[in-house]
Amino acid sequence: MLAMSGVEKETALYGIGAVVSRTGLSAPNIRMWERRYAVVEPERTESNRRLYSSEDVERLTLLKRLTDCGDSISTIAGLDLVALRKRVGEAVPMVAKTKSGKGSVAPSRLLVVGPGLEGLLRGQVILEVEVVGTVEDVEKAATQKKLPETDLVVISAETLFPETIVMVREVVKRCKAGRALLVYRFTSSKTASALAKAIEGLMLLQGPVENNQLRRECLVQLNALRDFRVGEPLRVAGAIPERLYELDQLERISRVSTTVECECPRHMASLLQSLSAFEKYSQECEDRNVEDALLHAFLHRTTAQARRAMEEALRHLVLVEGIEV
Image 1 (cartoon, rainbow, N blue to C red):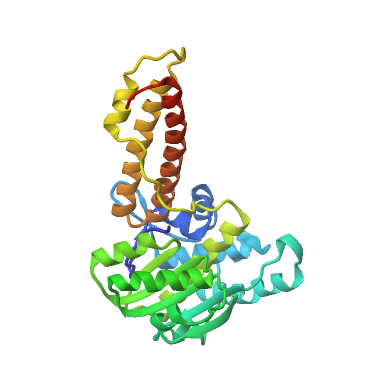
Image 2: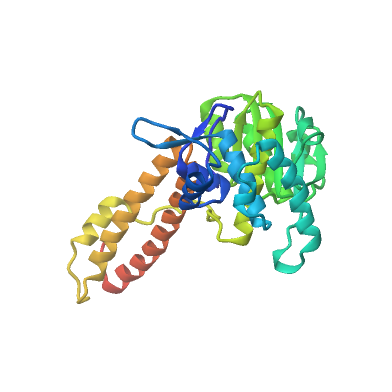
């Protein structure tokens, strides 16, 4: 699940962690490009923390795409956003045409659902995108007999209600989208949060949204999706597993003396207590820290699955040792 990454406006500012997860660049790489080539000039807080604008994120994303295609950063660092967009529009399709095999870059597939997204389909669209289909609204998409497979589905809905969660999840599932972008106008914070947590790979944007901002976010999402394909994805599929042991049970196990000389039950119970605490912490960060929500969603899910694996091992050990919990 991609947790709710925020209701973003053009004035949004991002910390270095959020920029790393949105662009695919490492923090040292970003700082090096800043220092040597002045590719962006982030704002600074009183504590000297870097804060990047949406345009900074787009610029870094475009520079990464071009360097991935073979451009030297020194030759493109001075280009403005318009020139970078044009160069990406020309360079990436050319790479796709001239390369073959593992290194080839295929056009990304885009499915558009709902009204008000015409800007994605005309003028200045610099993404190497193949539009595989358009559907009038999310309800029709959820019930349509067949949807084309896609990499990114962009959905527009004026309002969001609890029943929207089911429809959006159905659309994402049926078109096998790696990422989903949902643009809405009105909803409750509870519904928005539930929707984002229920659907992996979903990004929420509260409208009205300018076409430039929408294209920028599509670029970021497709860039992240492409990075996931060539490297290890920053996500773990599957639901958060239920707990097999409550904290008071782990506390009792940690105090039990057994015939196992290395005191494995006590050590495992202690490890599970730490995992459970960090799982709770990462979940709270996922809810509170908007700009790093993707990272904390990944940490939350990964920790939960590690916790479940340890619980299974402890359950076996408890049975072998005859420990009453």
